[in-house]
Image (cartoon, rainbow, N blue to C red; front, side, top):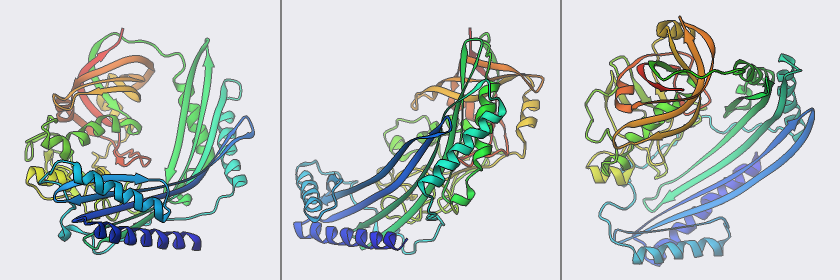
Length: 444
């Protein structure tokens, strides 16, 4: 851990010296970001350690602004000479690019003056041997479910440390170290000459919060078994539930539609819709960058801007777009601290569990896997290959595959009936299962 602090100190020195060099060259403004990631992964399969990988990646990115002209460059070599060459390259590019009145650093008044501790850095030393044991435990648990039909494809334990430092010519210099641990288990089950895969995983900032390997293994095997002998269904109109694990398949297009860069280009069906109803009135959605241990948490954004909780949807009404400095200037709006995107999207639920959502739906499709998506953000037209389960009278009747659900995202968001409390903690989109009113399900 002491070495980590030395590393962060060295990164700060590189940022500071790089900014001084950019100023010496004649830059009006400059910003430097450094990312260093170190980690390892261990894969086990059929009772043996099959693969060990180590990762050590470095990257420095620089942006130079001269007379409202911008040049960028990057390097994976953090030696003094390589860094200087990257800065010089960015400066030369800036001399030849077109002037853009909206370019430049985020205004100095938006810089983060205090960096909160969000508990993102939780180092735990896990040896290769210990990692292999964790992976093998997951596989063993999967085999306990059905040792005849379940065949392991591999269990993987990963751990990583990421060190981020960013500074700009406003005088801002911030750092954000973080850790991440994950374990996954994938199996295949064979029945009637057909194969079905099951995958489950857990990913956290703090090793102590990781799901037990045996839980992950059992879930992966059960998922595969549940999908055996799927049927096709005829094309119909019916309500649909997006399970919590894949709720991002509905919400990620919404996030893209409220991105400032899509809004100012008028490449979104939500352009000009601030203050209008987009969801039913019971839905509230916040972007919370300060969630402790959050997978998407950040004390400052990619421009050094102080992050803060942002209400995106309140009582179904669109409150804000997500804006970096460029899109905010283009739109004549206030920056939101979202350079790099949203952080932790918190979707308020309706206190229903999945079973109650199934009963509320009655007959329809429970979607558990996404197989390919096509969304036209300009029109909102939405088409998604899926698989899951057909629900009859609130109960799972049989697995379903080779179906496509389609509609318009504007109508789909407006016709959400309920959101479950079974929140998925493994994604930056923290939503429960989502029940939508009828739309087209294309089958056979």
